[in-house]
Length: 298
Figure (spheres, rainbow, N blue to C red):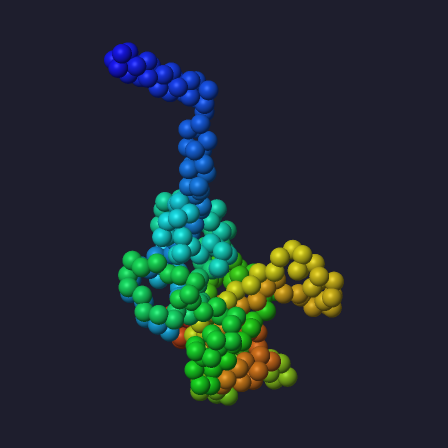
């Protein structure tokens, strides 16, 4: 009797189990889907230092490399993501790649850290985070980065010098140069800056020279106006003047600003990338035969 009861009880349990499986075949599937939905992924951009960096340094493109990767939202790497805080365009960076060939368009997107001030010391191979950086546009940047007697100056760039907006990056160095017509060699200033005096006799010896007035101006930021911004500025602009396509902000000494206001009427001024050579360049140095021809003609 007990054996029959146990057999019947066992069969009943098996029947209940089978019926449960048949009546609820998809019960486990929603649970698996729920777990999958919880594991969401996101695209992040990481900036990794190439070498040790010290606090107070202005970041340049040689100091870091960018990497675009896809990680789980719960990954510890998410806290190092820079794609939002500094508007780095992740689409312009090769996935899973630190270094690679970059076009001019890429340069406008993936060097947004350039020119930022570093708050902390960072070891090579570490990730740079938003908390470590101070934007050039912030008041804190001016307070911490500018030395006594220094200012931030903005050069507006017209179409003639548009290449500067396309080729330079924050962290690069800009030079301020002056092209002059030296009408009397003995009257030139000792530092090579000669004044263009059109009223002098044309028979007097004339000589063009390019003078590096301010050789080293670190670039803080570069702004290229959007088509919409250009449209507004063009409508407001006096049609007799060339309107700016953008601007470049640099650090300079107050004395340098005085130089600019002093010499800007003495000849034609140029902004050029730093060449590393501060020598005065004379036309005779570029075309040596020109002087000989000029002397033969009297």
